[in-house]
Image 1: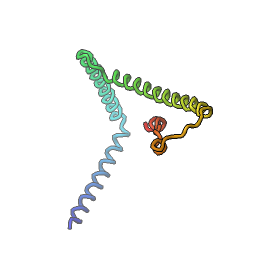
Image 2: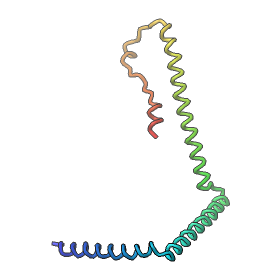
Image 3: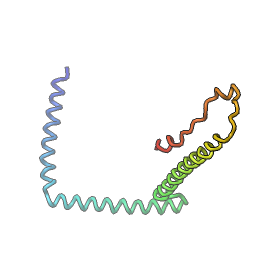
Image 4: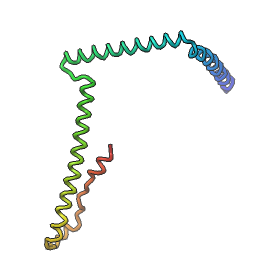
Length: 132
């Protein structure tokens, strides 16, 4: 039903793309255009730096942390979390190693029937570490 309209739109889009491609190709090879674009980008970056500095100063005036300070805090928290996971794993390994010799020398006591069917607690600390 709309095939004629769709065909016209596709043709218009193709013509527009071809025309814009030709103009942009000329601009990319124009030294003056490249020079002006470089100046524009440099001015934008200068403005961004000025804005970021002003924003940090305002945040400090309101006694709020800047984005940079928050990022540093997050990095430190991540480091602490990783160290805590590592220490937990080491402690579990140490506890397991201590329990094995004790289990060999301790007399074997019979477990009550209810305890024999209870599931053992699962240790997923290594799975948590690799989840990140």
